[in-house]
Structure formats: structure tokens, C-alpha cells
Image (cartoon, rainbow, N blue to C red; front, side, top):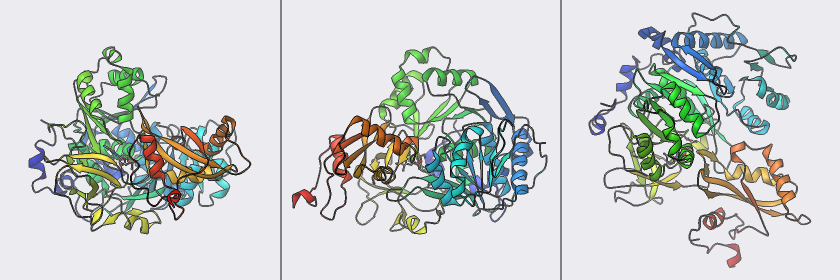
Length: 568
Ligand code: PRX
């Protein structure tokens, strides 16, 4: 029997108080996520249970019990407080998937500061933009990434502390840098976690917008209520599970379900920094006896491509439940996983802003391959018509995916950007920016984004950001960036560029432009291809029509072109 039991029974009379009771949380009481993920589990008598099994690239392992996580996160929290970090200050985590990243998140939350995780592959400018916007006070990083921080430090007067977790003493520490080693610091047995209330700011995740720079998504400690229950009912985590979430905590999946969900349930989780290959991943599952696996469609498609034979080399019989997130999960992947692993991947749909899973296929419920499943109990979801923003009752009609705006993990606003936040609502509904349809059985089907955002391998890329970077190059007159189909990543980034007079298209120029924008963009946002064109299609008012270029790449009908400049 799964944790959720009968979905139909669960949705009847559902209330989030189910989770609140299990968490012993009283309205208006304290709800510090960091405390819930460590101290509370120890109080339940699970202090000696493994919280984290970490496997490095060479197969080396580190193991942490809940008591270890409790003490180590106390040490980090106390260190931050002693440095003068105040509740509400932003503290950035900028590390590879090492234990300090996971334990550091718990420590920051315990201190009352706001955790701002950023993907460690970000370059100087991507980092600068996000630290400047958040007015971040401290960054916790590794030696290998400290150089990027040094390059931008002079532009960040607010960033008072650069904390290096693996300082080896070989080179002198530079301005504002501090060495902090969990192994060398005396463990702190007792630390009074900051008495966070439901609405106390907890996390700041950055996500791409359509028209502006990346936006900070503000979450609060109350998100624990949704994250705890969705982990229990969607990921079906139980006390004896060994869980693996493949996502990097630079993104929301890696925090909501790579730290908070499993640890608030007191489950053992495994993490590896090893690079992707079918052999690496299967060997990891075999060695750690993984039971529940939360991954993403691009990885599943890559495993499919690696073939069925490699699966047979490994004992994957420990796997009990498989879940996917981040991009459309194609039906073939569901059917294939059933064939080779004996278990289907269950799709789950949500986004940074929702903070927790919104629509999913639940264990025990019939899966329709290609469908995202049904709304989580307590979530009111609908497909709206895009003109009046009223729910469409007729099955099969494509419209806007929408949610009634109240569940504990929903974002509270965009950081310093309340207007953009308000603009996400229509007629009382929250719009995530996606299109979908609903079938007669109440299953939701994903159709596509409702904006120009590109989802490449599960990472959202704003065309605006890439175009802005291109326009800074001296040879570029105008540019338009769209998604191009790709077998594994579903979509990749393609740039169209018109050159200024005096510049001629060439392979050398393409390389030169690529190298120029590489410094400004996250590696995931880099175009796979630049196509030089004489001019770009524009509306009569001069707006570049990405839609036409997109349709061409996807072999779709171009649609209404009556507003095109060339038609005049
Ligand atoms: O477009 C949807 C797509 O990813 C977006 C959210 O991206 P992000 O905020 O980076 O969070 C990703 C991890 C939760 C959504 O608006 N998306 C997410 N899950 C699915 C999906 N598209 C199709 N099917 C999904 N299961």
C-alpha cells in the first residue's frame, strides 16, 4: 500500500492540517525548516540513522547521521550568527554537490538567514547579477569557485563575507575571505534555531523571466507543509527507503526534494557528484541500493539512448518507485522504463514559483503515458480560456494551466518585483505560464509554454537574456533567440543574428561571438547554433517576431502574419 492510498479518498475533504498535525506544527507556532530537517528527527529517536550518503567522483564516500547533520548545521548556523549575519540576510550557497551544500542549507535556515542557492557552473556575470539583485551578505563556496567571486567582489559592497569550505592554506586568503571547515570546527551540540514563523522568508531561488533579468522567487518557512506532504504522497518516501534525487540544489528540485522533503521525513538520501553516464548512474543505484529515484526527462531519454543491454549489467532490483520532473515526459520514456526497470516513471509537474509538486501521477493510480496526472489533493487546478480566463469545462481543449492561489509552498512575491508577481494572476487564478489540456478523466496534459521561455534539459532560459548578451557584441545589430528541437534535451537554444554594416558572417565570427557571450551567460543558456541572417522578421511596430522563427524551426504552420512589416 502506498502512502497516499486512494487518491480519490484523499481529495475528499482534504486539508493541509493533515501535514501540520504530522509535523506537530501549531498555527502561529515556530516552523523553522532547518530545525525540522535535523533536530526534530533526532528527537524522534532517529539521531543515529543515516541522513546522507555522499559518493564522490572517485567512489570515495562520506556518511552523515541525523545527529551529524544536526551538529554540523548548528556549527554553520552559529558561525553565521557570530559573523554578524542577521535574520533575513541573504546567504548564498555556491558549491558543487558536496555535503557542505546540503548541510549548509539546513544551517542557514536554522540561523534565520535566507538561503540563496546558485548553480556552481555559473560564470562571473551570472553570479554578479543574482548577488547584486539579492544584496547578498555572505557566500559559502569552494576554493575552485572563489576566483569567480574575487572577479566581481569590487561590484558587491554588500557581500561582506566569502566563506571557503575547503581552504588548504596554500595561497593567502584575499579580501573578505574566511576559511571554514566543518571537519576542523568544534561541533556545536546545542543551537537555538531562529524562531521562524510560517511567513518568515526562507529561500530565494532565481528563475528566468520572459522579458527581464532573472527573478528572485521568495519562499517562506510555511513551504515545509507542502514539501513534506508531497514528498510523502508523490515520492512515496518511507522510513526504510534509500532515496536519490538527481537534481542540483542550485535549482528548486534539489532543495524542495533534495533536502527539505527527504530530511523532514527522516529518510536516508544519497548524493553523488559523479558525471552522467548510464554506467555511472546504474552502478550508483546498484551500490547504494536506491529504492526511490527522482530524476528528469533529459536524463531518462539519455538512458534510453544508452540502450537496454547496459541495464542488464546491473542489479537494479532495489528500485521501488520512479518519479520525473522538469520537462515533458514523453510517453515512450514511461513505456520504456516499465520495460527495462519493471517500473514506470511517474511524471510530476511544478515550478520554482509553486515551491512544491502541483500535478502528478500517484503510486497506485493508473498512469496515462504522456499525461502529467492529476492535481495534488488541496490544489485546485484548471485549464483557462486565454481571453476571459474562465475555466474550460470541455475536455481536450487547449488553454492556460492555472491554480487557485493558496497552498503553503507558493511563492510570496518576486524579490523587489511585486508588479511582475501581480502580473502572474488573472481573474483570481495563478498562471504558471504553461499551456495544457484536461481529459474527460481529469488528467492534465502538458502542451507547451505560453511564453517564449526555452526549456532545455529542464532548465529555463530566457531569450531576452541571451539576446541582451548578443547585442553587447560589437558586430551584432539585432538578434532573436528561439528553441530548436533536440532528441535528448527536447529543446536547445538557437540564435539568429543580423550583423552591423562592415561585418561579414564567418565561422570565426560565430566562435568569437560564442566566446564573448559565454562570459555573460550560464553554460546552460548558451546557444548551440548561431544562424546569420540579413534581417529579422518584425511587426509593423518594430517588435521582433520570435514566433515565426520558432515555427520555422519546428516545421509548424506560421499562422497569422498580417502584422508583419514585410506585408506592408
Ligand atoms: O514549463 C514547465 C516546465 O518547467 C517549468 C518550471 O521550471 P522551473 O521553475 O525551473 O522548475 C523546474 C522543476 C520543478 C514549468 O513551468 N515543467 C516542469 N515540470 C514539467 C514541465 N513541463 C512538462 N511536464 C512536466 N512534468
